[in-house]
Length: 180
Image (cartoon, rainbow, N blue to C red; front, side):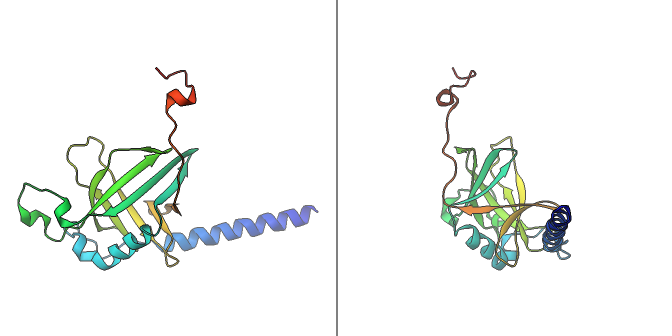
């Protein structure tokens, strides 16, 4: 019985190693990356990632018992009002990112995507200037069209494509001692 348990453990560990090795090869360094690139430079691949993200309502992951979810929506060129030099917007494609934490919707952000420093990924960059908490993240897609966040050169967070997330429950409704 103990030998069977050891064999099963060895199989699980080797399978986990294979999955990790496969994922790490899918976000190798993008050799053609340049800081000056804009959305239009990777529009085809960017659109494929956005199309895949749009096949479900939410992109969700759990982190230490907290559920996080994103909704990424394309925006039309008339949806964004810009008072600066119009040349600044050449080749820029706008998206709206909505984020949720345990069902609570955080402020919507006007964003864009640019090439990522990693292959098979795009970089989501916030454009709103009025928020003190900017964000940027790399969104990748593997050959099986699974989406993931790239946390670093050897680490990813896989995103589940779902149509429902947790419903927000206020502190007051939770009977929290911190509710007023």
